[in-house]
Length: 478
Image 1: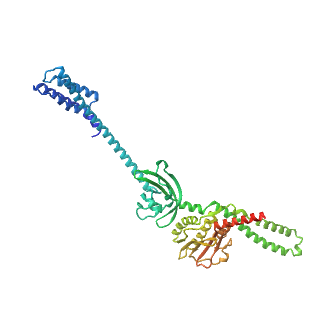
Image 2 (image 1 turned 120 degrees about the vertical axis):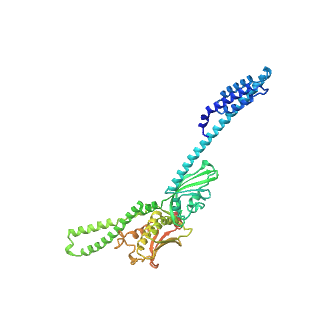
Image 3 (image 1 turned 30 degrees about the horizontal axis):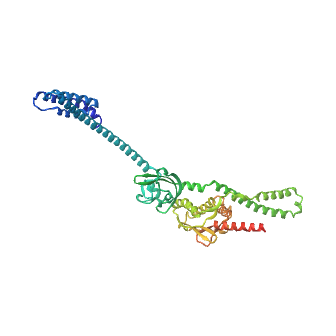
């Protein structure tokens, strides 16, 4: 029954109640028995209480009391009739008011039920829209308990983590370990809403860079964690492969390489000039003397070394595992497209090394790109990257199963014939390594092609610097 039905029933209720009152009065008037029919007015009062206001109920109750008193078969006396009339009025008015309140409460309940139904429908619509947005979102969406148990994961989340089946019930911290450090929310006022960039791992062990937007909240079932995860590996690849800092450093090293080659040519020309000076016919030739001055000037220009090229690098302690995690994100997607198998042999703990992180990354990218090019038309396609401690140094070994290098003696020379671009990749890579005290070596004894990037241990470098400082202090004291 809706709310309008009460208003629609009001005229019908009034008519029925009026007829019933008239019938009771007629019966009380026509039947001459010592029986009071006044209590029968309770029934029309129940009907009228549902449609009349309080004062209207009081008026009708008073009217019914008068009718009952008029048609009462007993002799009227004030001492008896007045208390009876008061009781009769109270009974009739109370019955009407009771019916009125019951009807009013019923209306309020119906309004409350309808409001709940509307809110439930609105909530259901909002939940359906939210679920549609979550399911259609290109980003991975998760909700978990405080211990990382996944309660909800959309289709993009399954694709992101490479899960074959449902992720519900799995532990998200296995795939995004950094989320395990988010403290559980105990006080709603201390809920977390933040974002971070961290390492992620797929079901097959493949590593990717994850942009994570997360928040904590509390429910009746306990604390919860919601996270939106986006794969930022492509962004990382673009950033690492086209870093403006590396381009500037490469340009400075390129200038050094050019000046080095020009100096070699100037030296040869200077030798020829010295030999020609022995000819008497050229001794007073002004053009020949000017040529000698030009050779000397060109040699001075070519001798200009950009000695501060390494000073702009951010050389300091670097975590090799972190660098290799980034390399893994960049390399493995390209390797999968080229059907190249990549093997990793990295110890659980590796000492910090002295390097510039971006320069070291540039060296490793260059070595792996060279391996990818060498394996393009080679049947056995495999690249292995290993880390080995060698006394005071840490070696990163990059090896491929390709055809190898035919002329290793010219490997690090710039401007080689047949090389890609200007043939400066390995020359610049070794210059980068040497700029922060390391070196890049080629191992000809290993099948295929094998390069070793040697780096100094940060702890050893610090000890050497402290010893040198102490020696200098002692010398100054003496």
